[in-house]
Image 1 (cartoon, rainbow, N blue to C red):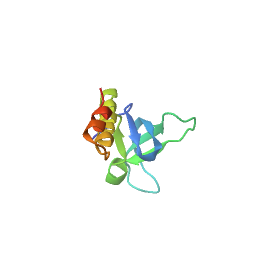
Image 2: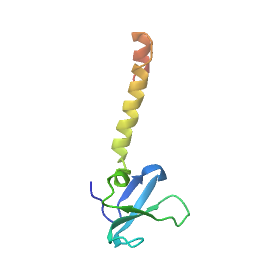
Image 3: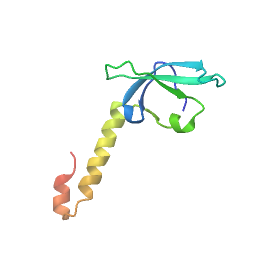
Length: 99
């Protein structure tokens, strides 16, 4: 999935980040290539991560942020899975169902 400057994403274990820009750069005498410049949104640090667009492993760490509806659906499915996965009788399972 391609992302654009300004997109809000989840990056690996860094949490919610913003793609500040996409820039052509070269490091250590490499040929220039495109990088996502990514900054964490909820820290006070000035950390900027450089993720090469041609590196599939690093780009696989970039995930879209769930919408509210998607997050609620995920939570409900986890609650239902947990509730129905319990070893209880039918009557007890019915009392655990979400309203």
